[in-house]
Image 1 (cartoon, rainbow, N blue to C red):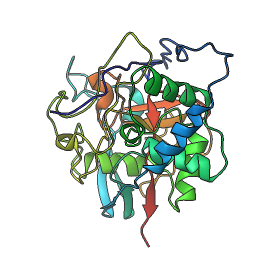
Image 2 (tube, helix red, strand yellow):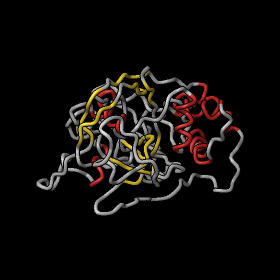
Image 3 (tube, one colour):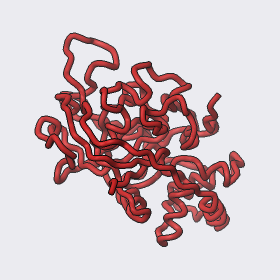
Image 4 (spheres, helix red, strand yellow):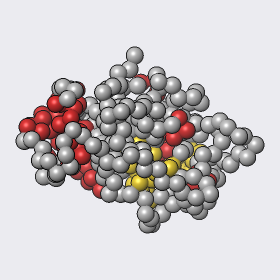
Length: 307
C-alpha cells in the first residue's frame, strides 16, 4: 500500500486548465489559511526546521530519453461522447509526429528538501506560504523533518523552478520533452499505459477540510511510472515546464524540438496534481498558470541536454 500524508488538503485548484470554446480559469478557494493570521510573524523555530529538512535532501537519479519521433497531442474525435481517448480541449490537436533530441530527465519530482537547500544556498527567501505550511505540519501534525524532505517541492514559482534547474546545471523540460517522457513513442493515454487511474497508480482526486496538500513522497507509486521508469508524471504535483502556453501552437509548431511560443500570459503546467480529476492526468492534457503563482499543487522536475 502507498502512503499518502492524510492530515492535509488543498489550497486551490492545481492550475488553470483549458477548455473549448474558451479558457476557463478555475481558482477554487484562494490562498491557504493556516492557524496563524496573515500578518502574524512566524516563530523563529520554523527556520531551524527548514534547515534540517534541507539537510535531508537527496538528488534524483536521471533517466535517459532516446532521440527520435513520438506522437504528441491528440486527434479530435467527435464520435466519442465520453472516455479518456477523446480530446480534452482544442489546444492539444492535431496529433503530430514530433522529433525530440536525446535528453535525460529526473526520475523524481524535485523534493521539498532539495528546494529548501537551493533557497538556503542561494540566499533566496522561503515564501510565507511554504513557511506557514511547514509550521502547520510540524506543530499540529508533528511530522518529523526527515519525513518532509522527500515531499515534492511546492509553492514554487516558475522563475524559482528555472533557477533551481540552472543552479544544478540542468533546465526545465520543454513541453515536447515532458510529453515524450510521459507517454513514450506510442501515444499512451497515461504514463503507465491505457488503464484508467486508480489509487495504486497515482495521487489524485484528494480533498480534506484543512488546507494542506495530500501528497506522496517523490519516490513512491512505482506502479504508476512511465515506460521510461519516470515517477509521478501523473498526479501528486503538477509540473512547470519551460514553454509559454499557446492555445493554437500545435498546428504550427516545428517538427523538431519545438520550443513553444515566444511569449504568452501563462507558463505550461503538466501532469495533474493530488487534487485533479482523472482526465487531468492524461499525458496529453495541457494546463497553464501565471509564472509568478505559488500553488500547493505545482512543483517541477529538471532535464539535461545530452552531450
